[in-house]
Image (cartoon, rainbow, N blue to C red; front, side):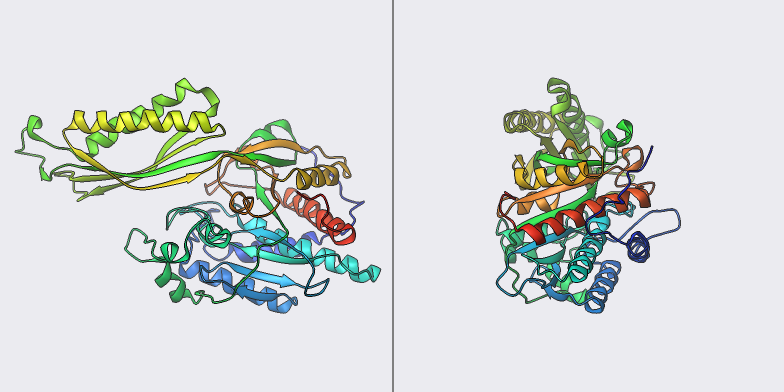
Length: 425
C-alpha cells in the first residue's frame, strides 16, 4: 500500500520527533509483545501523565488539570481573548490492549501544534486562535464505567460528584484513584471553539481499500446496561438440578438471545456482553449472582430502541427460564449523531491537497469528540489500522500513516490559525 507524500505541507511536522514521543509514551504500560495495559488512573497512567506534563513544560505549554483529572496543555499564539482550538484524545488503554488507540491522538496533537508554532514563527505571522492539547480521563471505560467519563463531565453531560463516586471492580472510586496519582485537579478549563481528534480507524475499511485516511462523519448511538441476575447459592454436587436457581444460566440464555437479535437488523446493530462478573465464582457452587455489562449499538435511534425493547423481553424470559430474579443496576445512553460539516470539509480539502482520498466513515465505538460535539464543532479523523485490529496487542498503525494523519491535523490547524474559525461548524 503506497503512502501519500506530504512534500507540499503548509506546516511540516517532524516525523522523527513524533515517533520519539510515541515510543516514549508506549513505554508506560507497554510490553515487548506490543500489548498495552495503561488503564485509567493507575500508576502507569500517572507516569504517562507526568511525562506529558513534563513535555508541556519543556515546550512552553501551560498545563491545567480539572476536577475529573482531564489534563490540558495550552499554547497561546493569539492572546488571551482569542478562540481556542482543542486537539487530542486519551492515553488510557484497555487491559491487554494496543499502543495506538487514543495515544496517537495525544502525541499527534502535540506535534501538530508544535509544527504550526514553528511555521507561524518562521513567517512572523500572528495566529487567529490559540491551541490546547487534551488528554481525557477514562475514555475507555475499562476500569470505571461509563466510558467517556472525563469528557462527559467536561461538557456537563455527567455530574462531577456522581463521576467521582464511580467505583472499579476492587471498590476503588474515581475520587480516590485521582488522589493516588496526583491528578485531582482544581483548574477550570473553558469549552473550546472547536475540537479535532485523530484516531486509528479500528476497522478494516481503509486498510482493505488501500487508503490511508478517512473522516468519521457520523457516530453510532449506544445503550449500555449493567444487569444482575439474582439466584441462590448452592452446592453443585448434591443440589438437584430441578432445584437450582443458577444466575449464570440466565446470563447464558440472555447472551445467546442478544447475539441472535442482530439477524433482524443486518449490519445496523451490534450487541455484546464484554464483561461478566460471577459471585461467588467457585467451581463447585451454583452462582448466586451474574452481572452482565451489555452493549447495544446502532446508527439508527429506531433500531436502538427496538433492540432495547426486545432485550427487556429476553431478560424476563431468561430469568423465568432459569428460575431467578434480576435487577438493572445502571443504564448509560449515548445518542447517535453527526460531526461538524465545516471541520469535515476542512479535513477533506486538506487531504486532497496531498492527493489523498478522505473516505467518509461511521464510528461505532465512542470517542471523546462525540461528547464534545454536543457543545462545540468537533470531528474525528482516522488513519488506517493494519487488518482493522484494535483493542489487541497486534494493533498497528505504521509510522508513515501516523505521520500523515498528524500532517493533516497540522495543516488544518495552520489554516485555522491563518484564516480564523468562520465556517468550522
